[in-house]
Image (cartoon, rainbow, N blue to C red; front, top):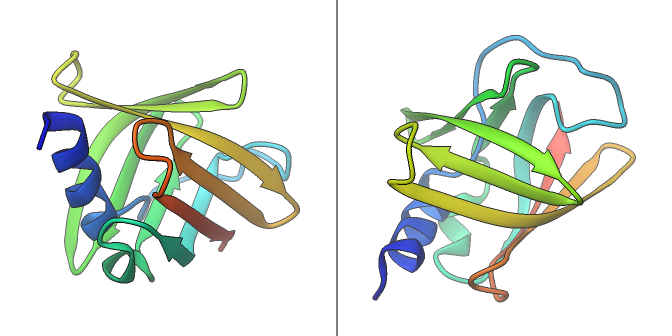
Length: 119
């Protein structure tokens, strides 16, 4: 199993965004989110995972009392998450935002899809 798929699985287990500041408006991913639907690798473990995207490009994911911090950027409907500040682990998700729902689809594992709800 390559490093991206392995980390994607771990990512699904710990999944995306917890405490911090945020409200960047309804047309941006900035803010707090919670996974309400998940499909694909380790998807059942992703339900309830919290994500927090900050205006400054920092983010955190909290699942099962474990928090993982990273940086992110969005461009052309692609969400890029960079762990460890370098090119150590980089994940890419196609994303769409409709109302209070954020949908993420892993670009390297198309079976992995998450629906998050704005908190």
